[in-house]
Amino acid sequence: MEPERKQPVVFAAGTNFTWTGGTIGGLADVTLQSGATGTWSTGGKVLNTTIASHGTVTGGGSISGSGTLNNTATGILDITFTGGSQQLVFLNNAGTLNYTGAGVWSTNSAPLMTNSGTWNITGGNWAMVSALTNTGTINIAATRSLTHSNTTNLNAGTVLTGTGTMAVSGGTTTHNFPWTNTTLGFTQSGGTWSLSASNPVVFATGTNFTWTGGTISGLADVTLQSGATGTWSTGGKVLNTALTNNGTVTWSGGQISGSGTVNNTATGILDITFTGGSQQLVFLNNAGTLNYTGAGVWSTNSAPLMTNSGTWNITGGNWTMASALTNTGTINIAATRSLTFSNTINLNAGTVLTGTGTIVINGGTTTHNFPWTNTTLGFTQSGGTWSLSASNPVVFATGTNFTWTGGTISGLADVTLQSGATGTWSTGGKVLNTTITSHGTVTWSGGSISGSGTLNNTATGILDITFTGGSQQLVFLNNAGTLNYTGAGVWSTHSAPLMTNSGTWNITGGNWAMVSAHQHGHDQYRRHAIAHPQQHHEPERGHGAHGHRYDGGQWWHHHAQLPVDQHDPWLHPERRNVEPERKQPVVFATGTNFTGPAERSAGWRM
Image 1: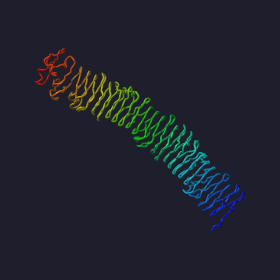
Image 2: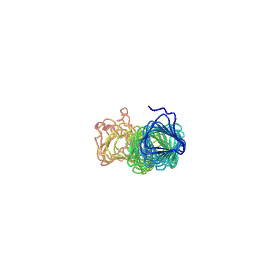
Image 3: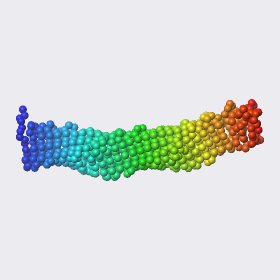
Image 4: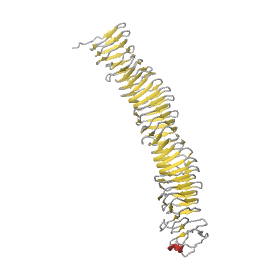
């Protein structure tokens, strides 16, 4: 039986306690007074009681057991060797703890360590695998590091100094003091870094925050001041608080998810240098400079919102905006690059669109809340809805192109193509619920246009319809310029939308069946006839090189050679006994032919 020990052992000033092996146990403590020394080296040692050092101890060889090592306010504990799982007892440092080993000192996961004194890591690196509670000073020398991978509490009173690196690689490090880092590097590769309320972390000018993995959470924020840098790479990262950048951050790899927000302020620069889908899974607010230089496609997820009130440069690859966007800043798209919208997009007052790349709408609703004259960018709509709010028209200037392959254009403002602008309209079905006015050249090579809108082809406009189909033009069409039909077969309009022509209408490729109402002025007909089948007829009958035919229905023709009055009694049986006034005769010149149904031949009178 272990006898009761009522009297401790005390090493007075000037004495030395050498410990190279064996066990110290019992119910009383061992104390080294100030001025005493301890030389602990070589072999494994077991401590099952308490040693309190007020003097200077130089250590070597592991210490295990159920005991506690207290290094008091006057005590100095110098650890001069390297090893893993050497400190296997509770260690309470209230004095000075120096690690000067050449390599890595790694604690075990079990014993607790507390520091309320000064802890200097000057020789190698310390891997804190065990739990730590700190209220003192931790000094990490240049090229040295302290890594936390268990439960770490950095409580009030903590001071972090030096020019080395603090790292979080696992476990949970709870930050319970406000910290402005002016000298240390900081790296998180795993674990959770939790900032408690009213305890923000600030990276000052000249410092760096490296983030390769792990979670940042809590009720306080992380801020990088102007002149600070961030290096974010490789693994997945989780942000559950706010991270505000006033400096320069390079994000070169690894998604960021979570409920938090990345704020890139007016002085901030955020460089995204890699390619990937669903990498930005947190809210992103850019008021500074956002650069995308990745080589391929950057695609956001459908969930997190992004706002831009600064400058957003897409210079490396292409950006697919699958998440919602609210923009009041500048978007610059370099040549051969594109920005694609496919969610809820609000381009609000203050928006500036620059560059020589391409904006694409392929899904969702893009609401255009600012007047825009596009002078350099390509613009493509392949799907979704492009809605122009009141007093916010869009103008495509000379030299620009509007490609339309699908989707809906709507709103209370118009789209205009200036003279010298071009339109390429093809493939899929399109819906027009506002007005498009073209002073330029539009090639319509495929896909119907329906809706409640109007297509105006002005005096300088050229509209080339190059494909064949029925019921493709399902909107009002007003031609005051040049309308060319070069399709190989029959173009047949629908019965509903009106068409007017006061310009030149050339039918040079196939045949045109005019099922809709039609008003025209000085058309030039070339090669084929035009059928006007408003009532019962066969639209393919009676065509010739320069032939005109009357198959019934309404033939409205208002120039001197071919006028037919709308009061024609054949169109209004109740008026057949009333001779309509004819102010302009109809003349068929030499070489022309007029073909009409026999039963109607007596009803068209001059």
